[in-house]
Image 1 (cartoon, rainbow, N blue to C red):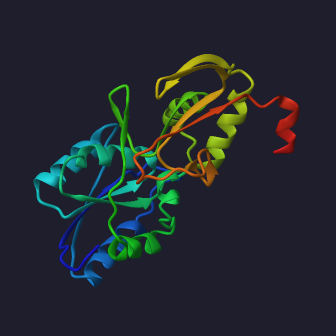
Image 2 (cartoon, rainbow, N blue to C red; image 1 turned 180 degrees about the vertical axis):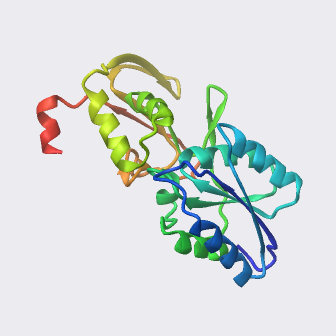
Length: 234
């Protein structure tokens, strides 16, 4: 962020990750004041609200719009900023923070705020799945199933996610898929088909280690189901 930036709007999801701490607002306002920047914020009230808030921030002329939450919040904010001149920032407060970790944005709030005001702005790839925007990664199979369940689970954070995965792993079967890439077709039994823009789901669980958000290439990873006897070796 350069010295000409004067207005920053923070879109905060209180329910991301392990919960909201009031000290977050103080840190945001202090960081803005130290750089002679107007920092304003709003809390999301439900699914899709972050997109509406981002669109309002663009209309109000904010230079930067910051997603404060997890990958879901980041995706919603990005949707509201698409095709605008506003730049997006991330303060990772989710359970996994996959895109933030890929971009080396610290999970510590004060360090992330420092990056927000000092880091270089990049142009990042996005893609669509069934007409819906994705900025980090999308999955077909077990990961998509878990993401859907986790979105409605009251037990947030890594512990809640891990418990959900272990509980659902045995009951979810492999499925048959036909995949066409560049005119080449292949059939496969899969447990997960991951379409990755960045390298990881979150918590440094890398699904596509060589992925880049700036190369205009999506990485497709096909995973088989791990036999139960091998789980103890992971």
